[in-house]
Length: 243
Image (tube, rainbow, N blue to C red):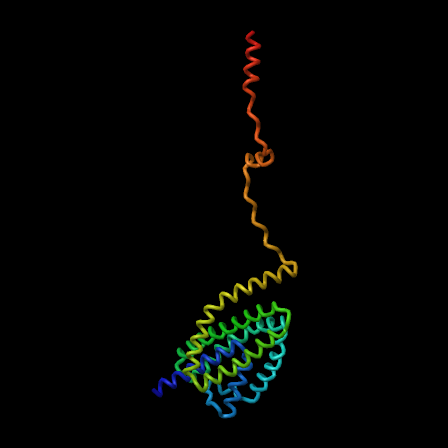
């Protein structure tokens, strides 16, 4: 039983670090680094560097920048797009560091899973923010940003103190993302189409009209039916000629 608890704790630490990195990398580094430096948690050897004062200072400075950039409509989307190349690799590296000194194969597997999970959370955050930015008021951006920071802190605390509960919630989160990501993608496509129309983008050409036969067109131009020839007039003229 003790061995199962240890495996659950390592798995929760691995997935928790990757999950949080996809939402807010600098907040994740600060939470793990501060908890490790204060002795509240024993970080694995691969993550002990997070408790270094220089790393904490750099993460704190970048968190302050992201704190304000994440609450400005439009700026938050640009910030998220730039961090596509930061959060996903960092999530994979933190997942590899969380498994500790084990077989390199296990570390590589943890990095692959961690990178995929970080990419999922990053895509969910970026997509939802792009849709939220369609609203003119900034309060939804502030609410979403604060909620994301709270989720990172609460999620990492749960992963470190209640690993089994965190793993159950993680499975539910993955199921929710499978259902939600296609909807977010359709929403992003609508937002992009709207932006292209606003900024004079190339409009989609209209569908070609169906070809109408010439006979149908002539009938449409001359809808009045033609009167049949007068047979009586023809018969009377024939009698006259015979006489």
